Length: 114
Image (cartoon, rainbow, N blue to C red; front, side, top):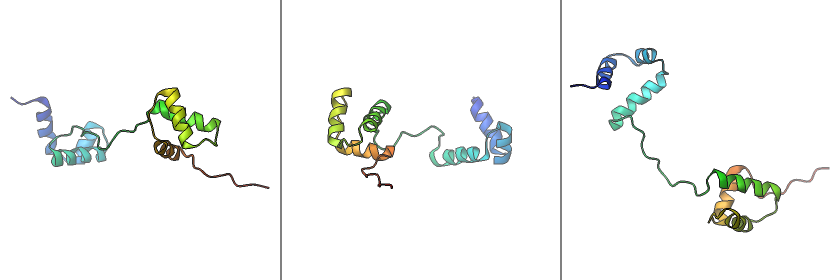
């Protein structure tokens, strides 16, 4: 006994990508990507995420941004200690430095203007 998805797949396999796209009302690139993924992996399920997750979540990043915008001259060490006392986040000064660079904060002084 065949499932409905198998029947649909068999019917759509004889059609071109353009025809499948038109029938399902989805972009051709999506149809092509699904077919390619099926041929390579044998499934269309999403794969597990590669790499390590970020230590700082959204809440920690918002607190970091707020802390830096209030006082621009704090060191990464003092910010890390501040985050540890206020939020309980155990992060290193290197992580603080990396997150600040990602948010667009850099350790440069403003140029003097006349």
